[in-house]
Image 1 (cartoon, rainbow, N blue to C red):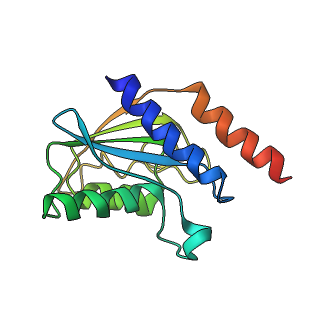
Image 2: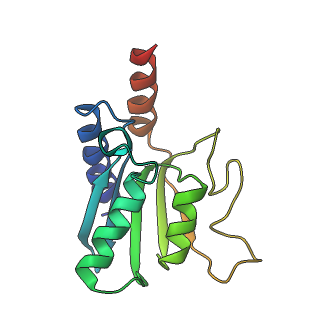
Amino acid sequence: MIKDFMHESLEEAKRSLFLNEVPVGAVIVKDNKIIARAHNLRETLQDATAHAEILAIKKACDLLGTWRLTGCDMYVTLEPCPMCAGAILQSRISKLYIGIFDPSVGACGSVINLIQNDALNHWTEINWLYNAECGNLLTNFFKDKR
């Protein structure tokens, strides 16, 4: 199941490519069913907050009618940034599955770890999947840009 959900987040990331967006995708799962999916739309919407994670959280909250996503898991192709890590904490997502680390702004353990900070009032379980396809997608995107 975990591989299937990460595959779905990769499919979301690939949708970003057609829009010339950084290919990051996210899905949110509750009771083994995808309830929300999104990909980066920052360039398309000209909105600094239009990251895949934020957009998926908004969709899940709308669907469930609550800001509390307790019992939900998120699968994301790239380690969330500080903004997205904060939104994951604020929405009370239970588990986070990450495809690849982000050595520049990763906020779930590579640069800093907001998700599992004892000084904060919520703690999210992190599962690193180290998916080569996630890394290749991003590497090729930036290589083509240069």
